[in-house]
Length: 476
Ligand SMILES: [Zn+2]
View 1 (cartoon, rainbow, N blue to C red):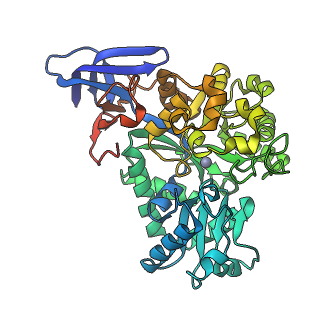
View 2: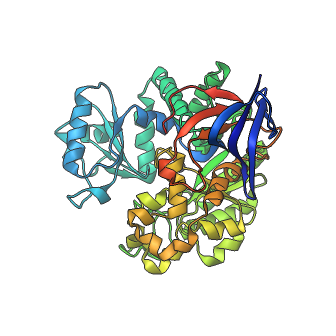
View 3: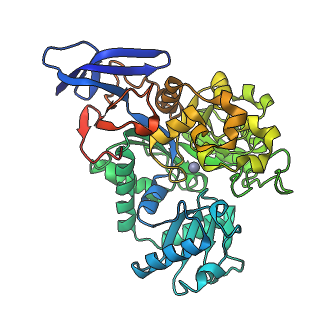
């Protein structure tokens, strides 16, 4: 099948910027930018390559599309109200996500006491926005044979999370996964790096692919424990995901100097020898290595460990990077989440203004290496235009403190779009341009010029994956 468009502006590449005024697609691939006689008149609309989100969590997205949404909750009282409402219309274990104690007017962390009177006959697991801590009820603590105030962090968080997810039946998990890929596709994202994937979720994805129910390409980064039981045979698996530290929000990101608002340097969650051991296993399978490192001391450890990796190397987040570390990123993809700038509005309280210039330094990283964009969804919203706005404006319009100190790290629109297309593809090991003759025809038709408009106002008119129109409702 051949389709062609004219009377449009096609941005086929963002760095260097390449612009055409027509597009021809045949059998799912870009053929040329020649104007054809029977081409569809787009009336001055804009065509761009579809987005590539290099780091997100499909299982969590699916779960949170189907669970209690606590993002933006402003008080423990409101959290209680939402839990009560959700509990009244559901059965089985309760999973919720998205609270942030920084937003609570009570000015404190929640505890089990805040929820025990609402649900005491089934487990409750409410993860913090960062996915490194959760609030659980006494019922769940007892079930796990544990004591505590109801806040579980890092390794404990993972143990509780695994347990509650193991209580969700497989049919539900399949539905969640389909919801997740369709949610992502509806924002014009054609490929994703699915990090921290389990073997169970890998098998669900492979089933969906066999049944032709995957509108997008999924490249999987297995979580490290599952690597032990992996047979090395899935064409979907691209790499493994390892962790050095936690998050700035929970003060578990590993810093070389203490936090400015507490006498701690954070936590190292996986020991160095273990990391290297996993990297060597990844080498055996020919897999890439993606290492989560947020604090600068974690980045040191990741940079050192990645010297052992033989295939693709990625550092996930790289949120706090010192000057002396920048050069060492050469050959390592920096997989960043610009929307953290907006969500982590408190970041300078944690780090102090003297460390402000180390934070989310996307321009400095771009000068040294390939920078890939991502959302870490559901940590941040899937919507690419929110991420682009954050990369371009750095929270200027939201009055984010960090902006005042790091305005110079703002990216130009074409640079931001480059990171979200070519940059992400490179981090996923895809050696191609986003929209050149011969490439898969994954593209979007937009209502206005993405390079000169307010990103938040841009609407997607049509989405094409492999030359075929994707007909589910566009979320933008
Ligand atoms: Zn993540």
